[in-house]
Image 1 (cartoon, rainbow, N blue to C red):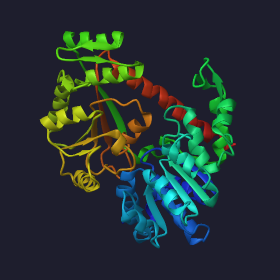
Image 2: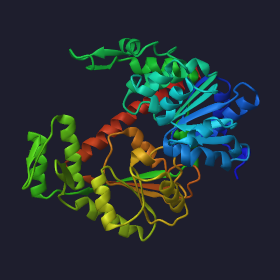
Image 3: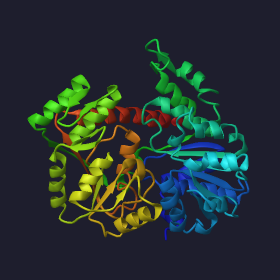
Image 4: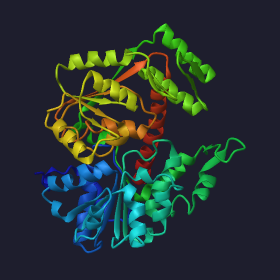
Length: 454
C-alpha cells in the first residue's frame, strides 16, 4: 500500500491548490495522478467539515475500475467510504442513499439522479472526473445540472486534455466549475467575445487572433497545471513508430472512387457517401481493410492485419494492446488472434476480468476501443507496447489511450506506440490533424503556466 511519502512534490502542490479553492480545474496530463490528488484534497475538505458529501462524476469504466481501487491503494484514503452508483436498478439507488462520503456515478446516470430526487440529492461537493465529458453546453447533462451548480460548495474539474478540439471546448468545462464567471454567462457571450465569423452560417466561426491568450488568462486563477516535463523523469519515455503498408492498385482505384465521387460500385452492392464526413469515414474503413454497405460489411484486404502479424511475432509473447476503431475490424482481428477486448458489448464483469488478467500478465493480446478504454484505466502493469490498427481523429482518445500504459507505476523505461498507416491515405491526414490539435492543447497549458507565474 502506498503512503503519503510516495506522493510527489508536484502532487502535493496540486492537492493544496484544490483544497484552497471552491472552484478549481486540475489540468494534469494523463498518468499524473489526478484521481489520488482530487481524492486527497476532497478527503481533507470532508475532514474539515467544509464539504459533507461528495458526488464524483466519471466515465462508467472509470467508476468501476479506478476510483474505489485508488482509495484502496493509498493508506491515507479509505475505500470503505466510497460507493459506486452505475448501471440501472436498485444498486445505483442504494449507493446514493447509503451513508458513504463519496459516491462515484457515471455521467449517464446524472439526468436520472436529478429527475429521481428532484435535484442533486444530498451532495454539496462535486468532482467532474474527465470534465471534458461536459464540454458541450447544449448537451442534456450540461443543461440538467446547470441550475444546481450553486448547491455545491466546492466544484472540481479534472482533465488532461482541456482543448482536444480547440478552445471551443473550454466553455462547457469551465462553466461546470465557475458557473460562467470567467468565460461568459452564456455560450453565446463566449462565442461573441472570443470568436469571429468566417461565413454566413452561424457555425462558420473561428477563434479571434488573441482568443487563446485571453481564455488562458481568464481561467488561470482556478487552473492548476503541470507540463509533462515536471514529472518526465518519473514516466517512461515514449517511442512512436509508423509502420507503412501499401494499397494494391485495385484497392487504390476503389479508394479514389470514394474520395472523388463519393461512390463506389461493388460487384453485389454500391456504397454512397451522403456528405464529406461520411466519405472520410468510408475512406478510413477502406484503408483498414473493409467497407460497410447497406447489406453488411465487405472485407477487402489484409494489409494492416499482415503488418500487425509481424509486430505480434516480434513481441515473442510479450503483451500487446491493439487499438481498433470499427467492430468489423475487431471481428477480423479476433478471427486471427482470439483475445478479450474492451469495447461495446462487453459486460462490466468481463471488463474487470480483462483488466485484471492484463495487469497480471496473463494476456498476450488485449483489444481496446479508445472510447471505452481511453479514460482512467490502469493498464501499466500488463505491458509497454500498443498498436493503433485504426486511427482516431480525437486527440483526447489518442492521448488518453497512450496514458493507460505511460503512467506512474509503469516499470518499463520506454513505451512503444506503433501506428499502422496506409501510405498516401486518410491515415496520414488523421495523424497530421492530431498533431495540430496537440499544438493548441499545449499552448493552453503553457499559457496558464505563464499567467500563474505573474
